[in-house]
View: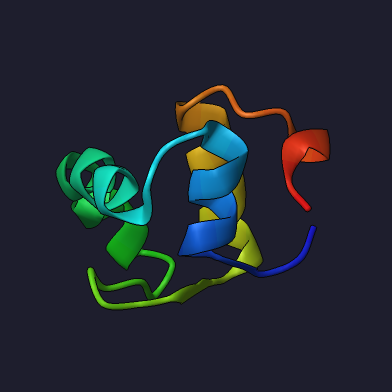
Length: 63
């Protein structure tokens, strides 16, 4: 697992970064445990894993 930019995750999900941001808004409390704010662009590996599990993203779909 490695760090990913939000736009890379959005592309893997097939949505725009703005849509991803709105989808992550309800999860901000959990993401803040990983050191993420709404303005964080590069997500740490733990946050990426959380997002993948929450939104059922296959890790192999990420670049």
